[in-house]
Image 1 (cartoon, rainbow over the protein chains, first blue to last red):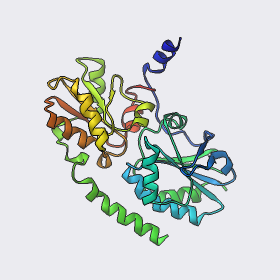
Image 2 (image 1 turned 90 degrees about the vertical axis):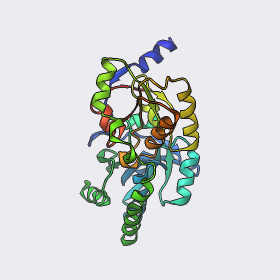
Image 3 (image 1 turned 30 degrees about the vertical axis):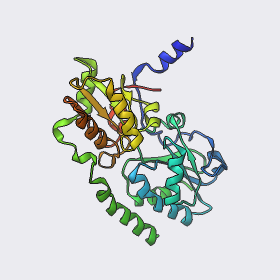
Image 4 (image 1 turned 180 degrees about the horizontal axis):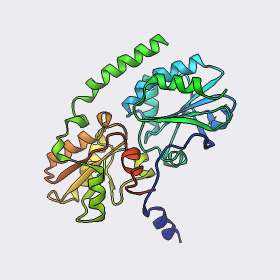
Length: 157
Length: 148
């Protein structure tokens, strides 16, 4: 039975990996932050959330960190940035955070969490989630920091 | 705000310098294979051996049918894993490597993998050209994948 289930799960098929569309309820999760505190996405309900899928090996992701730090500072109380490291090893994410400390929680991601978000099959990928927990929009690949600002300002109040 | 912009600008200026030695753009165009071409090879003709030389989390989410996980070649332990995977492959057989973790110019793995396999003597080596990432350039195009 297990063998059959595994075979089915690994059957080759055309699949979608598009980011979840606007209006979709953002899949909730609770994961420990890199320093061990529980982080629950839905606990930020009432604020905008920037969910940043990143990794230590992703140069464009590292470039975006100062801007995310700045956004967390500027929109404190109205916006919560949450980083999701897609590193294979937690130690790589921890090392990266030592070199680029951030002012928001970072949790470890994995394949199941990536799949919940439509398949995180390339970085960077950032979701803007509305105060009601629904996805407002997303960005994948190289992006300009000003796009994040514009997205936040255009988000429903 | 200004400091954040300046920091981002400085990092962006530094990126090309970081990406120069061994970066994906250094791979000769003659060894690149386009996603469409590889997808058609999978359905007809002799299937190449395919190695994924990126990150495990991404491989576990989805990969090309038959692709062997060989480890992130941008890291020493990834190179070691790639060499082990390569031991059982005929060096004269067509081999395709791919990563797709991030935009081509920033990929930390693919050039290192290409160089390693070339140095090992693989003569029919091809590199899958993934301009943005595996999700956008392979999965969303409807090419076959295995979801873990």
